[in-house]
Length: 212
Image 1 (cartoon, helix red, strand yellow):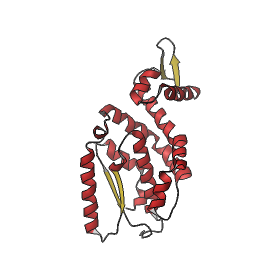
Image 2 (spheres, one colour):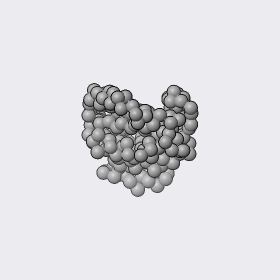
Image 3 (spheres, helix red, strand yellow):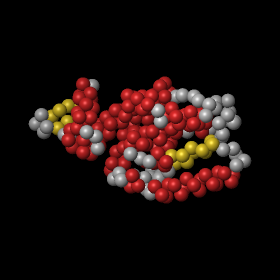
Image 4 (cartoon, helix red, strand yellow):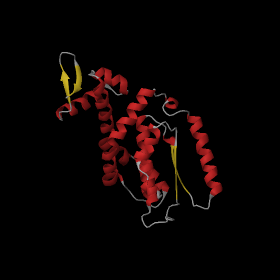
């Protein structure tokens, strides 16, 4: 299967099912077996997934993409051995980052619900094409991508987590802030935005927010 068909849903399904690392191997750039050059699309998706993982508090080194030819068996074995060693060093997913089991489930579920939206964002606003891997990495570590990420993805991820928490029970701004590790002002901004959209309501008697 062409790496261009690898979807972020595949990656995060693996993490949600308890995998501690995900390895993707593809053809070398400009050596695609198809006319689609899908390995460039894969590189774009993987770098975005790593950015999202970092934002969620997960070590992006748990996701690795390597390009090699089908005849480089020795290189494949070496790269996989190195990746396995790295994942063992990182420890179990979540635990290695100091995230408790419930917190990890919340983060992964919140992101999974947003995958259709993020696919659209990636396709329309974040899909770029450069000649080299270094240029891709420079873009994804740059201020322009950071700005787009804040505007298009970060707030959506926070709101998705808040909605999941409020499905369980009404919560105050302070309680949500403590659970998510965000400032009360950030939580208030997200709650006010969600209230204007009719997604949440403030229960005066309990001094807490609940789903509308």
